[in-house]
Image (tube, rainbow over all chains, first blue to last red; front, side, top):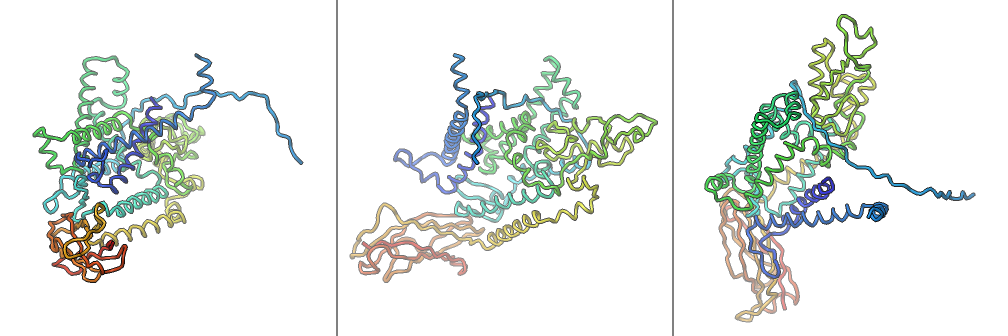
Length: 81
Length: 471
């Protein structure tokens, strides 16, 4: 549980900042999705954008968490099985 | 001389232990006093602003509205477009410097009195106290097995929290979508899916943070709590227990002078621990968990009053002041020190620049973008044409007519609208074609200028550079 939160919480904060900067600079009506102009409402684009940022940041945090495991822990896990 | 490296054959052993402590629920005891009054004043002030400001009308629109769909921010008479991001950036820098300054002078004033986490926890605790009773009653209720009474109290508490959280979520969304329209949509069941989602999302966070997580947000989640220590120095006012006066602690027997028994002023009643929202013992010294709410000062002062000893065993003081037994006069004289002076100087410089920037901000904005699809083409009469997209934004409170002209090349001419009309805070994007004879200017890119001028006010004028491609 604590691992999940330490992935989700920092990525939430960073996603918020990224969302703010990205959509200040880019108008959602000018985005293209698979070659087609995006025809969602602005609010939908902002919301989807936020969750995309969150997922990307969470993936990065998750990778960090994963790489933090020491070799010893892996060896320990092997011996147990 | 070379020292040989010591080779050890001792294997490195890793001891696995949990990084997290087991969480124990904190039951803050209610407290009254000078600082509690201040905290409640701040709750009223910040929440009247938050819940009220979105309902305030201004020139026929919402006074404070961050209209994301139209990409315009309204703050009373000011209109900001995404191009004005610099003002937001400066505002954030001002907030950060204010925080540094306040922290250097008075410790965690922000955390104790103004942070939404503290403010909402205070409100949610008040609801909890009204429904479930005081600290002792709440501890007892939690320990009891589920009963009809407990169920009733729980349902009442969670519903009250839920309603407040929903209202908070609704208010939050009301800063991004006109709140009066949002209110009408609620009652006609026509809220958009994303509006419903964000109301519930923000509401749930409020409920979770203020109702359940409380001090854990400050202890484990808040980035500011982690680095506030670097802004402290020995002259920073913090909530301090005067150990030389209080120790050795212990209960005072009636009829005997406690000083004759070699005891200090602290009667070890533990009320300072019971009132602490983060559950720490301030008598152990300054700790990073302390949010500076001063609840322990109020609590201790009441005890000191009952015991007939002077107040202020726990008080706002500084490390130097406690060590050297300074009074307020010396503490205040130490407020002015290089760190504070530097923070203040930087802060005022930025604030002055910000105000100057806002005051002289042009009420007209123009963006010129060359049409990327067509570089240059030949039209009737052998003229060369380039196409531009003009975005004209009126950031004033009045409707305006604007005249558009183009210059920079011999015999330059513009086809399209030459006069446009914009409502207050309105904007429009439209295409114009610029034509020149083939021998005008050099081959390649030439600099041309678009000039947009308010017809009623000659001083409101914007000159924008663009490039004209001559094939």
